[in-house]
Structures are given as structure tokens and as C-alpha cells.
Image: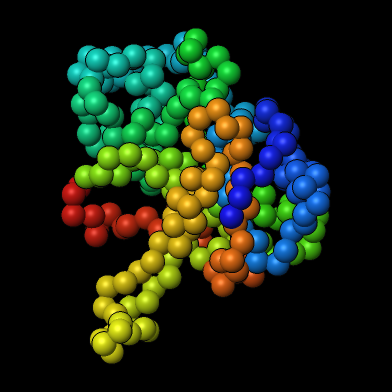
Length: 252
């Protein structure tokens, strides 16, 4: 696993696939069958034109109330409401929202870090459909190089009852999201596994996050090798297939 270097500052309409292919060629490398590319959500959102100025939002009374109870900017709260299906927790420390894609995270994934103009109120929203974005990227890569690869779109998320953020798959194509080993494998003492479901896409996103970095590294893509056993022929069901169904949610 390694970050890809020499990538440009991405903007609306640019080709992520073309930039990644150029980076690999500059390093004297090429795609191999079974490669996995982990791409930071921010560059996907940037090329898809998902930047917004907070001042452009018409602020509702609900957003004003959310701002009053949390001590946060009302325009930011309006942006969070617009990107969410439900606000789950509201405190001065965090606003936890169910994003309209089903993912649960702080501020519905809206962020100003590594966004030009962020200090002046410009923010970046998630892609409209991260799984569709991952599928489109994969199709372009495979068309250019005719190899079987997996694509993960990753964002850093906090975790309940844990300190710190972790790279998490929000979009996925051509990669197993989960590996269900229940009833199919045994432990060291011959006991059949009863509850083991491995989060493959999230594990790869977390590993790649360490290589890409979170600050000014300028390396928003990581190339992962050695995990080809989980790369699939078809796009697959996407990262949303790893979300726990609401009827199994013990906390809502």
C-alpha cells in the first residue's frame, strides 16, 4: 500500500482517473489485476462540483433552533439539515446526522478543511451518490487499462465510544464490502464461527487513510495491493450494503 504522488489540485470537471493513470505512469508503474484504489471523498466531491458557500443557504427556523441549541453557525446547520434525513444528536460538541445516503456521522459529512475559501464559509458536501461515483471511476479505469480493480471512496469518520477518526468506505465498486464467515469457518479449536462478519471495505479504507494522511500531505489517493482476493468481477452492491438495517439498530 502506498499513496500516489504528483496528483493535481482537483477542481470541478477534472478527470480523477486520468490524473491517477498519469501518476502511475510517472512512477514507472501500471495497474495490475486485483489492485484497489482508495480515493478521498474530498477530490470526488470537488470534481463533481459539490462545493457550496454557506451564505447561499436560506436559513429555516429549524436551522436557527439547531444553531441556538448547539452554539453553531445557523447557515452551517441549514446545510447539515439539507444533507440529512434525520438529526440524531445535537450538542455543542457535535451534531450527529443520518446522511440521506444512510451513513451516520458528524455534520452530515460537510467539511471546510482542505477546501479553498473554507475560512470564508465555503464547504464541501458529499457526492450525491458515492457508490455511483465509485462505479463510474471503476468503469473508467477498467476501460483505460482493461484490468480488474476495486475502487473505494473513503472519508474520515468518528466512532461511537471511541476517540479519533478512521477512514471509512462511503462508496465502493468491484470490492467485497463484507465477508460473512458465520457458519463457514472455524476457530483454532474447531468451533464454528457464529457472529463474525468482517468489514472488508472499511478495513481497507482505514489502512489507506494512514498512507494518504489528513492534512497538507496532498496525497488523496492510495494504491492497495495484496488484497486481490476481495476484488470482484462485478461492481457489487456498494458501501450502503454495509449499513446496519434500522430494525437492527439498538440505539435509535
